[in-house]
Image (spheres, rainbow, N blue to C red):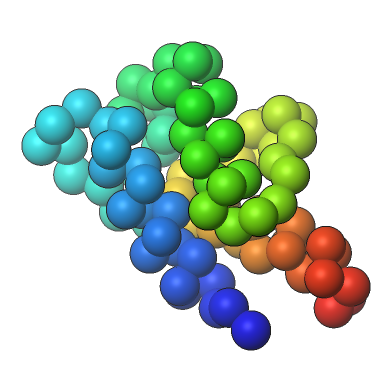
Length: 86
């Protein structure tokens, strides 16, 4: 089973592609405030995450997720629910 740490690594690698060049990114970086991610970038990123992890991410997840660490945790929960492991 995939770990939250592995998910976080993959999420952060993907976020780097959407962040302004040279912007430092860590697990607690605020996606909106620190990276200035606009809605279109967030939508593109979510679609890539859906493909990466073979899950469906609902837009309401953005109300609870502000950092890569929170996003990784949410993805893990979605994967566990999708696989019936909870």
